[in-house]
Length: 62
Image (cartoon, rainbow, N blue to C red; front, side, top):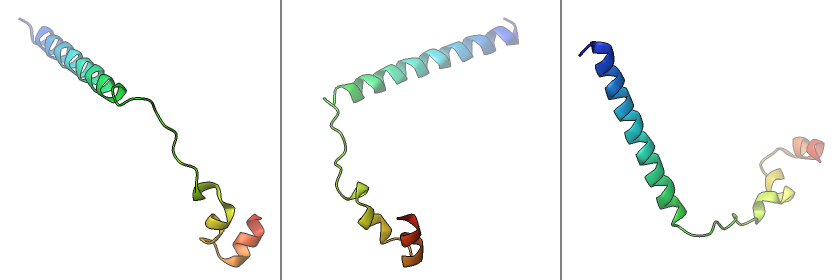
């Protein structure tokens, strides 16, 4: 066989293996159940985030 054909066969085999691995990973992640949204606690509280800035910058942002 020519070298080009061998490279094409190897590349195709790798591609098929990657596709099968991807499908398996997607199925495993899908079996975890219903997706629950992340809790919204302090992440949207402006007072919490303003503590990271100096008072002048925090006042400017508000």
